[in-house]
Amino acid sequence: MHLTQDLELFPEYTVTQLLFKDVKNATELRKMAVNGEIKGALINPSMVVDAFQILVAANKAVHLHKSGKMKTRSLYSEIIFSLSPTNNISEAFKRFGISDSDSAVLIVLVHNKDETLNIDNIISKVDGQQITVDRVSDLNDVAKIKKLYKVAPQEEKCGSLLDAVVCRMATKDVA
Amino acid sequence: MAHSDSVKAGVPSYLMDAQQIKQGAEARIYRGTFLGWSVIIKERFPKLYRHPEVDEKLTRRRTTQEVRSILRCRRAGINAPVVYFVDYTTHCIFLEDIIHSVSVRDHIASAQASEQNPQHLQTLADKIGEILAQMHDEDVIHGDLTTSNMLLVSGAEDQNMKLVLIDFGLSYISALPEDKGVDLYVLEKAFLSTHPKTETLFERLLKSYTASSKKSSAVIKKLDEVRLRGRKRSMVG
Image 1 (cartoon, rainbow over the protein chains, first blue to last red):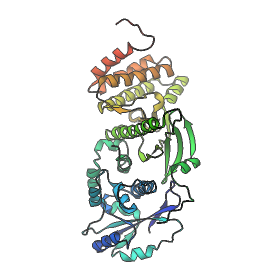
Image 2 (cartoon, helix red, strand yellow):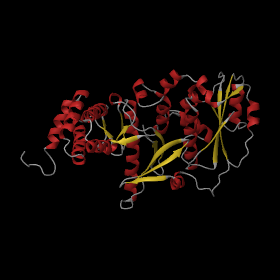
Image 3 (cartoon, rainbow over the protein chains, first blue to last red):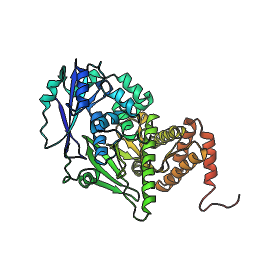
Image 4 (cartoon, rainbow over the protein chains, first blue to last red):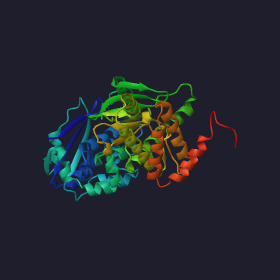
């Protein structure tokens, strides 16, 4: 049910995404992410348009991690930061990370291809129902996404909301 | 996470497998796949004839200007390729691959060769004028306006013609009518030299520009002034 994809630019890494709804232990999960029990990025699905958005963020984060140019302290916090259209780190964590009251969570794992990942271990820690990642559209808030990324109706003449979001993520360091 | 130093990852090794499709003086263009999508990668390679510090600064500036202008155009509803990823260490831009398109240059050339449907080219001129007006109203100066830097996406009907602007490497932000006039002058020179006997077509383009832009009169005035300058021009003031 989880989604695993490769990064062409970094062939030794793989990105796995897991999506959960009706989550009851968001507070615990947050603690586990902070203390390292869960080695992944916990993202708020309401701000996610498509799994591709996560992949683009992960790609950028891995690139910056490898070149020693991350703005945040860890790869996982960098993924969350890369999702944001602004360069304000704490705002990024607030909007894209999960809070204690959230009932849905998207977990992103980045691991070496040769590492065997114990996905079931992670799934067992979540008190919620796992669904396929393509169903993130059931859990997202398009109006909120448009507002945060500042996507005006005229831009939608050029492309999809996903295009607008990805473009901002890619260009925010200079915009 | 363990780092595998023996595997040399990153953009340069990726480019070795990608398909190079063009090389210009400024950059190499590749086509490849990126996270499941077909992309164009624009690599601004180091110029050895330049002083290294100057080269780095200039290349970085060109890359950031290009990316900034693309975003600004898209925000205003002007078609430009989506930027997926920018590598500031190798100065590579990963852009959306506009498939099923033909450059306006090739399109005009084949339309003229087959001598069919002159009305269609009129509509194209109208559309180009409209889009450039929108772009200049956003204060984006393209910097390298030629018919090779405009793509016509196939499939859409005349009225819904989809034109995509590309190659924003020399672009910048400016509100000055002089800069916009020069932008149009560059296009005029490129247009008339690439496509013979198209003076009326270009006039139509300018008419469409004038009608679509809110600030056009100052720009056209500057265009007339710029035309009087330059090479092979009278030195009578």
